Length: 336
Image: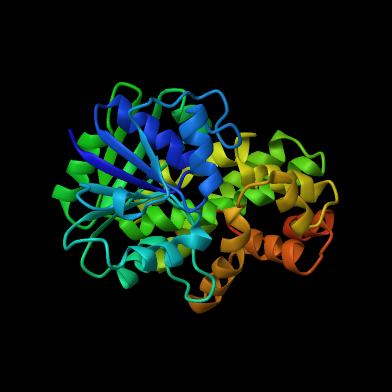
């Protein structure tokens, strides 16, 4: 049995707490919100974020951060990406050397262009940082629907330990040393999912969705490999796998926000309607800045930025994508 502290009581943190308790581990869940913890202790259900998923009485819900950190084998960082740095700062005096911090948030910090694990390493220099990602909606994991994900860590032993803690008959865990590639795939797919949702909101069909997914993963891999990620990672669970599920499912807050924008709502109006952190909005500017830094073309992500932040009509953005200069699909395949 391992001791796990889940830092963050949103849908993903709660779903993972349910999974880890099912696996026989001791689980504590922390939230900064007093009302949220009172609801969880009273109802044993997160009625706002994960309704219908009952929570075992053995799971501890607390506002006391120290209670969810001290003596824990793994800390699961499950706060939304905009709050990773501030939460890591709260942990500075509580973590111990070589404690495992597993990031499950997806995003890129706009001001620094750092991934979430890089932020954690910057704020918590003595811990071992790992990441968990893949096609995995909390709404399905919480109900024990078969799911497959990947854990990335610099040390194989760390990845294997997390794999053993999380894996069961409905939650298959692969491991990988490509932490950067996993996180870039996870963050950038949210921006492409906004584009897929916008296309749905405009009333476009399956052809358009398939085009956005296919060309979207090409953009993600182009930037990711330029930054040092491995191409194979972007063809795997945290790349094309996560992109497919995020672009296709109504569980995806990024797709839902995109649909609302495609129907004519502003970015702010869409985010208020979704009532959850739409992480693709926070990653969009950072992705564009990275494309400029590494001199990589990301036409879909460029158009998403213009729709989000420059009030560009969504249908005009699609039109400009369609009439771009003629290109080869794959540039390194030679003609006979």
